[in-house]
Image 1 (cartoon, one colour):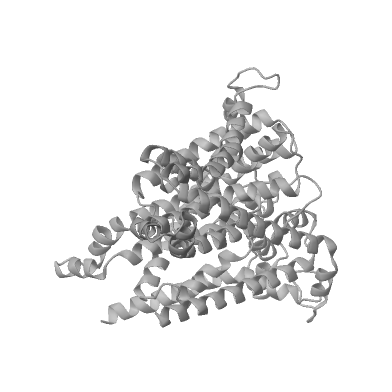
Image 2 (cartoon, one colour; image 1 turned 120 degrees about the horizontal axis):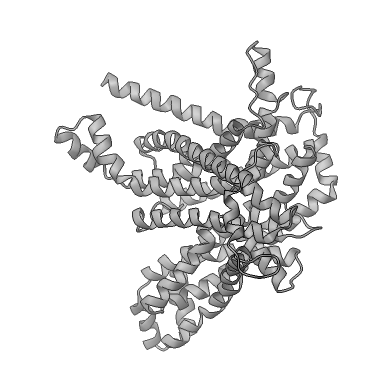
Amino acid sequence: MIFSKIRKVLGDIYLVFVLIFLYAPIATLVILSFNTSKSRNRWGGFTFDWYGELFKSSTIMSAFRNTLIIAFLSALIATIIGTIAAIGINNMRKLPKTAVMAVNNIPMLNADIVTGISLMLGFIAFGISLGFKTILISHITFNIPYVLLSVMPKLKQTERVTYEAALDLGATPLVAFFKVVFPDIFPGIISGFLLAFTMSLDDFIITYFTKGAGINTISTLVYSEVRRGIKPSLYALSTIIFGTVLILLIVSNIAQNKIKKNK
Amino acid sequence: MNKDFRKVLAFPYIIWMAGFTIIPLSLIFIYGLTDKSGSFTFANVLAIFAGEHFKALILSISLSVVSTVICLIMAFPLALTLKSKKLDKGSLIVFIFILPMWMNFLLRTLAWLSLLEKNGIINTILHFLHLPGLNIINTPAAIILGMVYNYLPFMVLPIYNVLEKIDDNTINAARDLGANTMQTFTKVIMPLSIPGIVSGVTMVFVPALTTFVISNILGGSKVLLIGNVIEQEFTKGSNWNLGSGLSLIMMIFILISMAFIAKYDKDGEGISV
């Protein structure tokens, strides 16, 4: 009995240790964002200046806009192509299905650096100039597999008989699809979209190789700033991003728990 | 919609994947196996054995092996402790452990730079306590730290996923049959968590092996990994043939990892986030 208690306490201590390891860097960024002193090792007093500077900086703001637009558009287009494709693939024979799913795994399992370089070589070979649209195409490319993998399992669970019953009762195939199949696979579509959106937000390597000059996302901007010397406004940016993510996740967490309880 | 028509729905996707996955990948093969004049050669691939390239590859492999092992050692007890708390899916504690993963990857690495610098926060605190300073920035140790920090969640999640699926009755049965804690662990829990471990290991090893970002930021471009060599061939050196040839070497390692996953994690249960 005492033995298992010791183990429980040790386990809790370990959890706290890992939590400190995970959150110390983030806490550092947050604290530094309020520090008057530009040097990183001295506390010069509390300030909101870096936040003001952040919103005045047109480079950071345009990078922020690019990141959001690319994440939203790439997730949306990937969700449309991926969902339609999932229906098609679900009706394929085993052999072509296996082949398609194997290709689908390539962008997921391949190293980002190889995916990034290969896309860059592809764009240049076909004379597509690097810029916003090449980033968008690349993000759609690595997002589609995630959508497909979220929708396919839901499609497999839907009963073909209900769809056929709708047809027998006089629904056109399109109506039958939207009234019967679509509600069943909708959670998969949503989670695919969200996964794609976050993948796109977080991507650096593939964007780095396919962006060309003159356009930045948050990730590529941070990378170039780190090499030039970090400005405190980047700490402010990190704090805002962390705060937003925290609020979004807490809200979605509460919403999910409510849905569970209602069930 | 008849069956043949529904198959047509996959066409836009197939065309997209052919155009933006298969053709670009073939270009890496074409560039990697030709020289600048376009004639066939193995020189770009064999260039991996040239002094500095080989050194970078060996360093990459050793750093990513060490990071993967550290991640595994840290993640397994963590996942076990989380399981012992019998949490619901989506509970607050699990959520707290996933949260840092949602922070931008570059910003997380930037944070470590601020912590580890010579006049950084850790050293200021150590100095204040009259302890010797920690000078690991721009060394392989800092890179390992960055890798462990960034990729630890990739190890925790798959292991936690498989552990959670182990029925408590299986463990109780082992105890009833006389197994002690250690035996239960080695004979029941460990074997059942192999799929999670395998996908965790590959999900940490592959990005660690191929990174150039962590080594650039925390290694201060003093430590050259194979990822840095390839990146520089494309951005600075502009010898695309050589860069592609070295990428082919990297892809061999990725293929080996994929084969591992396919062998041990047949249902893909470890990968699901």
